[in-house]
Length: 310
Figure 1 (cartoon, rainbow, N blue to C red):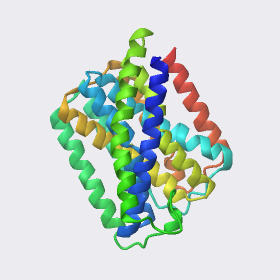
Figure 2 (figure 1 turned 90 degrees about the vertical axis):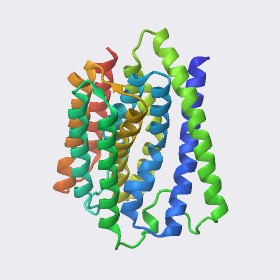
Figure 3 (figure 1 turned 45 degrees about the vertical axis):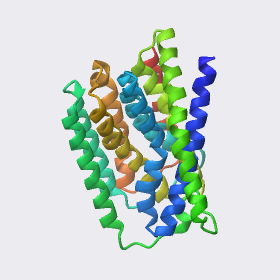
């Protein structure tokens, strides 16, 4: 029964996240912003909304290990699985997307996250610093893209005609209502499963919950890869990883201190950083994401799962 409720929670998160992203993108169309800006912010933050809700719920229920594991596991999955699986199928020409600056901010955020984590706990002071860096990222991104026109074809859920305001509001409301419901089912039952099988909250967060809450990113990336829209692919993944680190941990640490299991410091933090650095040559040297690189990413992710589940 708990397995069924856990998957029901994942399903609600996926569907609600889909509605939230649809509404957010249509709202952006109405406001008129650039494609990369939408991918780095609206799409990325929308697809990361499940991680935020799960982290807040887990923290309030005393399962902070699940919250931290979800963030770290999602960032690893975003690079190795979410980017690797679609490019394994069709490849991706990424030289049309200028994401060097945002990628640099992602690496800086990851390094700061690891430094804070090595202290043993994310306090409210660290939360304020992380949220301040998020504000800088948003302002910098808007400033960099303020003069770029909206490219409607670069959006995953773009339709030929913009939705009405009522439809946009309807999508947003469904997303806002469905996300906490799905998170409640997922966190409650995933934590119970972990205790029943003697598995720590951290491992559950790194695997089941991380993969489940990364499904919106996977859906977005797959469609964007098929359509050869590299700016959406990279913008979504980079923005999602930045949001996971700065917003999710920033907000949850304001609610309650987030203790760091020693295994994160010894292993998982460095896998997260390594996965991020792995795509640096593709970003700065315009090396193409082909099927071979996709295979390598997926193989590395499977190896990582095998290591933490032993």
